[in-house]
Image (cartoon, rainbow, N blue to C red; front, side, top):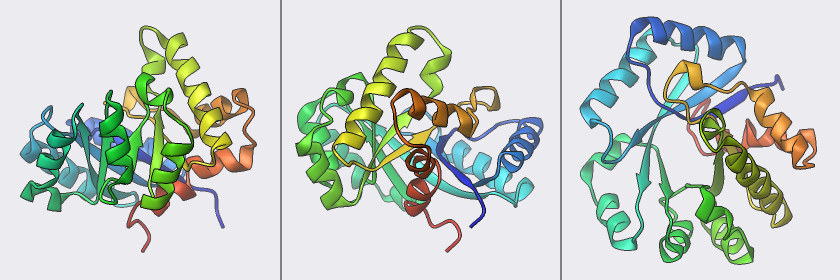
Length: 221
C-alpha cells in the first residue's frame, strides 16, 4: 500500500488562492483525506458549507468530510447540540471539555468518535478513559497548532505526555494539525518527530496520521 496521510481537523480556506495553495500542499504531501471542521457556536454554518463546497469543486484529488467540534463543560449542553437537525450535515463529531463528567460521558457516547486532548483531558488519560473509548470505538485527538503560539513549550509537554500515556493504555490516537489557515498546517514529519520524542515507534506513529484517522471517515469507501 502506498504511503498516505489524513488530517481530521482543518478549517476551510476562504480565498480561491488559499484553496489552490492547500490543494497543492496536500497533494504534494500525499494526503488522501481531510476533515474540514466547524466549531459549534463559533463559525457560521452556512458559510462553512459554502467554503467546503468550493474547496471540493476546485480540489477534487483530495477526499473531504465535514466534522463538527463541540466545546462544552457540561453534559446537558452536549446532549442539546446532539439533538440538532443540522448534525446530519456532518459525518464526524468531536468533543473538547474541561469537565470530568462531560469527558467520561462523551467518551462513552458512540455518536462522538473523537475526544480532543487539552491540558485538562491529558490529566485523565487512564484506564477508565481507555475502557470507554474502546467500547465506543472512539479515539483521542492530539492537535499541533498550539505549538506555533504562546506557551508552546507547555503545549509540547502536554503533547508528549498525552502520546506516552495513550500508548501505555493502548488508546487509539490521531494527530491533527487543527490549522485555521494553510500557514498553520503541519506536515506529517512534525507529528512523527513528536512521536520520536515520546519514544513511540515510527510504524505506530504513522498509523496516528493515516490508518486510524482514515478509519473514522468514509474516504475511499
